[in-house]
Image (cartoon, rainbow over all chains, first blue to last red; front, side):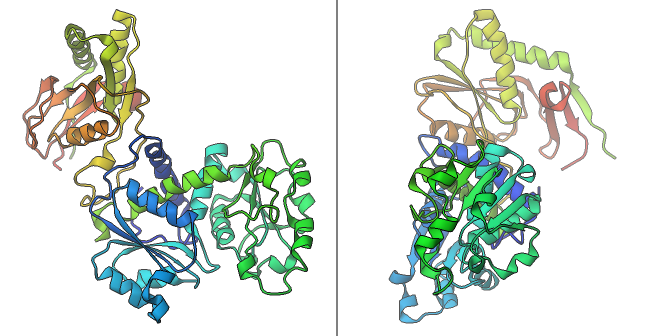
Length: 309
Length: 180
């Protein structure tokens, strides 16, 4: 297919064909990760800035590795070490960095629409690495890649997304993607953590976890975002665990062939039991590996040709 | 109006493949030191066909790999489209091996430069030898094939395609009449 996008801002804006195209390339890039010299010259001479206004381990390392594997030069800018602390605006920070002749910006920000805002004002290619509670498109893409490695066809699957859906940008990106694949999706969360935007999606809602986990091919557990909680959304963490955690007892009830996914970082003993995270059904670490391959594919596609100039 | 001109048919193409196998067998190199690498898409078909002949004659097994050179292209940042990346598969040790590199058409030499750089990222071969079906005699780099089945000196803007039954349904070499 003819790829024409300059930015990756959301899953919502992508067509199913575009998602498939990214994943096709990601599968090929995964081969590079298996080499002893994990480096190809595809982005030689390009400079990528990883602009992270929120803490991140996995995503930042994953992008940094993807950039290095493609031979791009990359620098990481985090809030604490930048002039943002001195009151500089997001746009000023980005424009100043771009003035140093950079080619791509990977941005994580706590405001929804931050990546889109930068894309509208910068000449660089912009990749959204998470904007507030809006979207986290690269996470969803690596998740689709991981699911496709096991099941091939996303349309025929029964997927459960479990946990703090209200605060989850990952859930929103996943839902947009699953909707394009026409996947059968069920959501399970306390009513107070179930967002209002769900009317946009054709999905099932189940408040009883024991019913929800039955007969699912994929159980996707979201992190309880303790840092984003307002008071009163659920009575206590202990009660949340009792009603919505994938405990070992519940794990024994799930379908034989089903897989357990989690975007990380895991709160062991909160949204899922530690033994479940380490079980054979867990593909959590495979998700992390696929994250590098997916991000390589995205960097390659956004900055691989003249149409970006 | 486009009408392709057939340069070679099945017999001639197979005869070149046979000659490649004969040439390698004559080289007096130890078959234990030899590995084959084909450039995707059609170089790996040539590698497989040549290996088949040698394996039948010598009752041996030749390791065959395939490489996608797109990530090593020198024009990747200026071309207008994004080539689809295929997986490179070299699941054997290249160190101190004699690598026979196969491609269908040798044109400017830039693909081969990319392929050699990629091979070097997998190890340090004793030698790399280049085997191609057609040499178009338009090289832009100091690279020459060790074996070419045929030479074709035609203008640069003409397109020559080698087709194989495995992916194209027919064995033939055609010259596209339409100018680029």
